[in-house]
Length: 357
Image 1 (tube, rainbow, N blue to C red):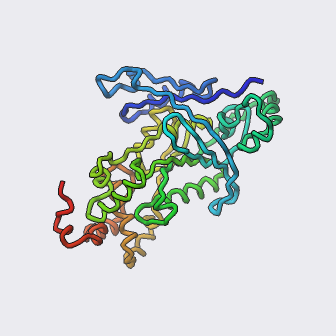
Image 2: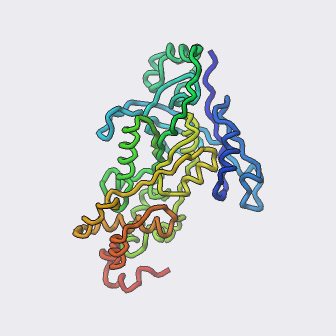
Image 3: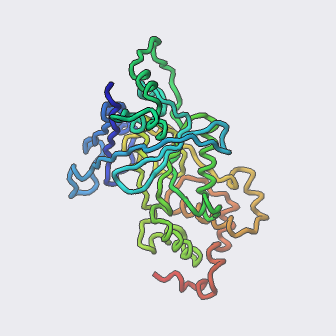
């Protein structure tokens, strides 16, 4: 029996403009389930080069991902257990993760979510080896690969799965910090996917929008002196958002998920993965629970400055970083009374000395 080919993904490294439906259609026609899962760079008339000095070879890089292990994770946020997959890659030394709801091995590409790199046959391996890393047994692998379906394929349209590209946040998810809404977004994504019984959360090691935990903590100190989250990152010598989603797209291809309903408020995420060949059929907003209609009213009596920290953070992402989210009027009115970060600053800082450029 021939082994399952390892997925290969070619992504665009240069920034590309927003991609319209014609481009999406062209990318779809390039194919998704080929023997190598290779996505060729569309021609310049489809995705024009933005750097005049760039050569075609500079615009693509082969990104390979390898699922090292899969295990079952029961969760308090959904009734059925989901699968946690750990990935290595050839771009960085991080261990990125995928939480897959509805993992099921099938020899027919596109009929279910499963990892090509995990389930491929490795020479000399035993059933015990496969069991330990979370792959299906050799018997199941051979049975699925040699079976010939007697029934005609199901042509009924299936809604694309929910997907969330989530950057890790130690302070929010582990410590319960309310400077951000990361933990709330992660839990909400798990609940939604658990309810539908299918979906994937791509959990990337990109703390602090790509600046790392140490500089993220420094940025928090700057925020307490009156900077906003965008200004703080820039003050430390980083871009406002230094994250990349090329590994997320490569993992989607390994899982054979060509189209998703993306849980995000960030249009850059949409443009990024569409530019690399994933079809985003719908952007699903992630609205903070306290911002939902009827819930903001209760915030008028909230005195906790940490809640305001999170609201100011979200407002900056909307007003200065292009995130798509309606800011409640109550939050806007509250923000005009003073930044929560300035509440922690000294009188000297409030006079503006901490904001020198």
